[in-house]
Length: 193
Image (cartoon, rainbow, N blue to C red; front, top):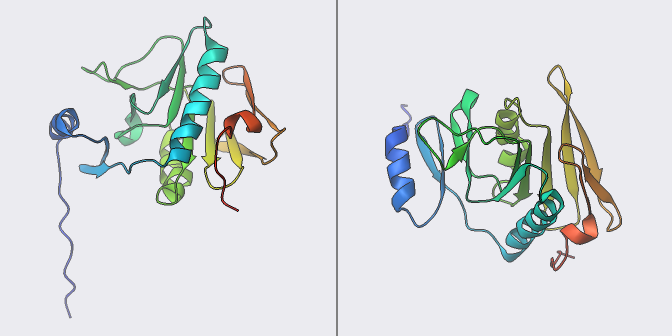
């Protein structure tokens, strides 16, 4: 018995950019496919905001730019166009060819985990992010419970993961020289019981 195969829509990069400029929502682009990004919860937005404010305030005047959700990232080796929740670039911004809204050289990426994206953020997306030579830290924040993971490269394709779970734990972002307590990250967050 033959099984029907789902036909995949293939879009050009130009079509993706055209759609992005007109759409009321943001989308990722990978391998000819466009993936609409899901809307965030209040906790997701607060956690992203708390990280953005803490990092941006600490980095004021230190030659680093902090972006939240609307700056697109191109992962060149995988041709993935995506929007990290929070991203820090130290030094000059390297833009994708012909774009002033897409960067290629983050030092730090923060993603807030959602039930629908957690496996992707931990798996394939992290695999793609690891191809970025500029990336020195990757942080994952759980929005349902107080739990943060920090990933750092050790060299030779290996990464170290450190977990933080208590309000007094300090997330030390050595790539940008910023320390943040979990209490500050989770300020005003309604955790599941």
